[in-house]
Image (cartoon, rainbow, N blue to C red; front, side, top):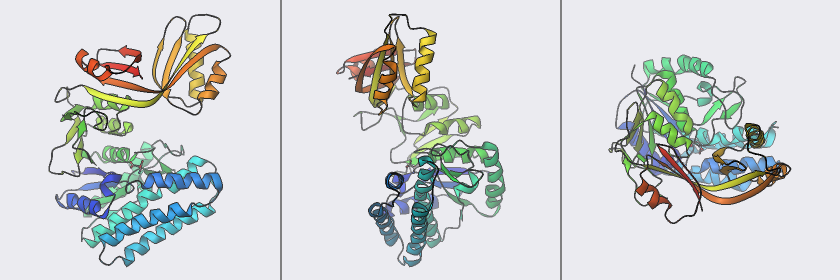
Amino acid sequence: MQIHVEKFGGASVNSAKAVRNVINIIKSEEKKRIIVISAMGKTTNALEKIAKYRYETGKADLASLQSLKDYHNAIITELFPNSESALSAINDIFSSLEQNISSIHYGSYDKLYDSIVSFGEIISTTIVSLYLNAEGIRHKFIMAADIIKTDDCFRSANVDWDATKTAIYNIIMPTFENESLILTQGFIASTNKSEKTTLGREGSDYTAAILAHCINATDCTIWKDVEGLLNADPKRMSHTTKINSLPYEEAVELAYYGATIIHPKTIKPLENRNIPLFVRSFLNPAAKGSVICRTDAIEPPVASYIFKDNQTLLSLYPKDFSFITEANIGNIFEILASHNIKVNLMQNSAVSFSVCFDNTDVLPALIEIFRHKYRTLYNEHLRLMTIRHYTQAEIDSATGSYQILIEQRSRTTAQFLVR
Ligand code: ASP
């Protein structure tokens, strides 16, 4: 059976007009497909705020809840000529969200977060399902929590592949015998005790990849508001080039260095089954977009630029003037790991060790610990520039106006920590 998986992100469903556009894309081709949808617009950010408020005060942030309700109700009113029943369905979901906020005692913030923030996708997919019905488009609406199974590492849950495959075989595959369209949520999953979990911010791409892997889909498509994969963030560089095709390995490298176009966990499940990943524009669905697949080279062969701002550089100098040794480095990394610091770049000399990581509130605590054995120096608000498949001319033009604090080059990758 040929099945296609397609994911529509928050921007693709952020208004009534946007929802209609998604439905037109779905209508334009008759094929067996699973549609994965994110929360509408900036809903997840708003729910994050609500979860934080509940955690810190024990109360519901009524004003934020009301504006979220107003936002969704306005979309419904515009979508449905007779909106009564859709408004009442969404109202019921908001009531259970409010009930959740007021009644449940959560063990941890992360658990509370998942049980509140997951409502964004439930609301968006319910609206889309009702609209599909109104348009007479047959589909089966399946809850992602019933098919994507994870451990209880809330906010960044790890997929239980065996349980997920079993659920998908039992629920999704029989459905495709009679239906050609399945609608579900991105980002949300559940534990074997049916507690809500989420896969991490922007995790809907990953949901699509999990589903595609488990059903051995023909392909997976991520619909975005850009024309495909670009070799740099257009907000940071005035001239960008669209990449037509990219090997899986290169996509993993780009995600590793901080490219934000695809959730980093998305590639591996697709690569394992040789499923091509298309990145296409929902604003221009006729255009070809980009594909990440099993191929030898990037086409066209261009350098890619990744910029990471808000970087801290911490340099440590042993106070006893001893050399930096494996034992020192091991100890430094233990301390960094215990503070959840992810190192973006590191470099050492005989008597110094420097690490670069995202700016963090725990910096004073880290310095306090390191101070006993090391003289410490640090700089904040730096930029880490990574250039893949560089030429010297490209490096010169990208770094020209900056002061370079650290520079590293391999055959394929050049990195510069600059200010
Ligand atoms: N709604 C979630 C987020 O904004 C998941 C996603 O959109 O991929 O992070």
